[in-house]
Length: 242
Image 1: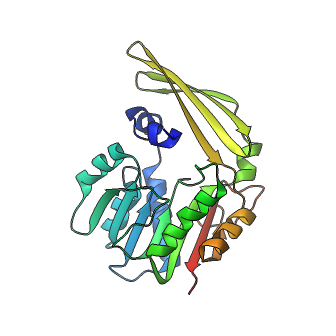
Image 2 (image 1 turned 90 degrees about the vertical axis):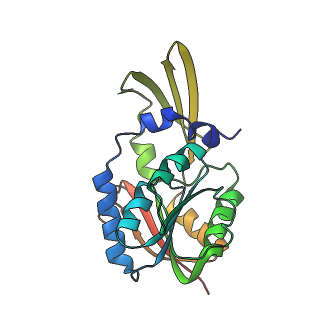
Image 3 (image 1 turned 180 degrees about the vertical axis):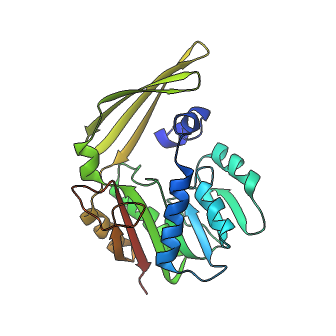
């Protein structure tokens, strides 16, 4: 089983990352909407939506939203917030979501770069293009590879409720590899995360292969200019070609 299908479907994944900044996420969405200027009622696709925090906020802003994730547990949680204009589905991002079309597709919080084969990354982007309307937008929120390498912490311990997570990180074959070890109720657990170090140039190559044209790049959630040496994020906005 792929590491992401295993790890993302556990309660421990959500426990480890439960302190995510929801207000920051909402400010980011507000900034994106100001930039994109979508029409009222525009259709959004939140690809790799997790428990749906971005989807839920987009829906509150008046948009028709579908959130998709491979994790059945995440989608079960997200579906508690579903309504007529907000749907959640279990879906593999490498495959087209049949029967839908969207004005905007978003892939947020480094929910990309999981696959060993570059061709699978391109397949994800082709699946995005397949559901985008003509001149539709794609937003990709990713790590800044250069910054991640420069600031890598080889080891850290994180306490969440009653669980102590021992985490080690390393760079291996152009991936950031995070090993996560902990104990709960007398049982030892080990999980791994692997995220590809993809830089701006490689993303441009991916986009061209998939039929996307890069329009803008930003370096943080305020949508400030991207600076490879200092920006914490690489946020790319692209448009469907043709």
